[in-house]
Image: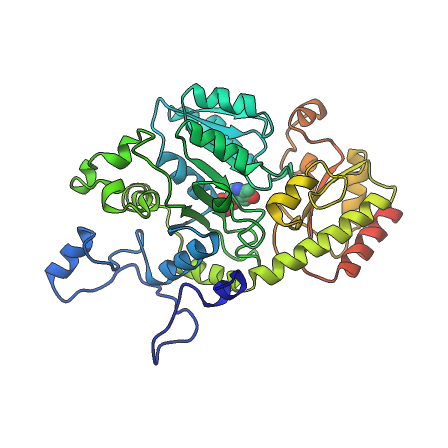
Length: 419
Ligand SMILES: *Cc1c(COP(=O)(O)O)cnc(C)c1O
């Protein structure tokens, strides 16, 4: 099946007489005919459900679809994107070990790696996404996981996934890619050598800004024996001696993430949110097509307006990311644009004039939204500190929705020329 078909048909395949749409199993528990039946579940000998913290029929159907969309072998949903990133790192790396990450990543992930994981004894080496010598040095220096974003939020750089995967694999280290901004409708990182894909499903996958969630997808190909990842190749004493790489060779990563990490850390998505997410995924290819089309039209308008100092959009000809956008994103840039309007005052005046585009601390949804980092997410920073974080006082992040491009441009044009 092609992606568009999978988005609608994959995951839930009802039998005769069953509901046509995915039912919501709003239940924490499940019942059994015998003690043997529940014992087999605990021994992972039988497939089934016993507690929604670990698995749930609604959630499982959405997980099957999302694994299919990314081309992976298995997937696990989590309560948020942050939970997905946290579990994916803790599944691989222990206290006293290191990871390497692109420095151009989501602010929440940066804090997680730089502050919270550090307190847990995991050190993160940050490298510029195009600094391959720096990446290799960190891998040689013992990094146990490599991390980057397909399209970085908010830098909008496109990761050279093949190069990152090639270097990571040279040192037998798995590559984790956050594919939130691209979605599988635009890029499937596993096809370029990534080993694990994570998402904040709160963004385009849900798409309507109604449900928070996260996702981990197992590529199923990484050799944990060769990499010396003992937590996959030696018995797990907390799970009566299970060896993940031997018992679940197709999906050791997600199996361990679920039965060990999710069991102990408990950050499962709610079945209601999984249901809402599933509705979003049904229209994903249509929406990503429109988001990309609208954003390109808006980016061209902004560039030609003579009112902006600089603009970043990967699919805009002349953009630094343009050739990587062609290679990895099929020329589609997704919906987010950043531009510098010149000053803090101009940014505020422009934002306050917008009528259709809403001021939100969110991106990647059907409605057009704007964010001025200097007066919101990065409010506490001085102008010098802002510049060090790669943001200017006049930087605006614009998330193009799926409204008519004409209306989005009319709104922006009014605000640009009257503010
Ligand atoms: C929003 C976001 C996250 C965090 O996801 P939440 O669902 O908000 O926890 C992680 N990575 C990227 C790229 C994001 O945009």
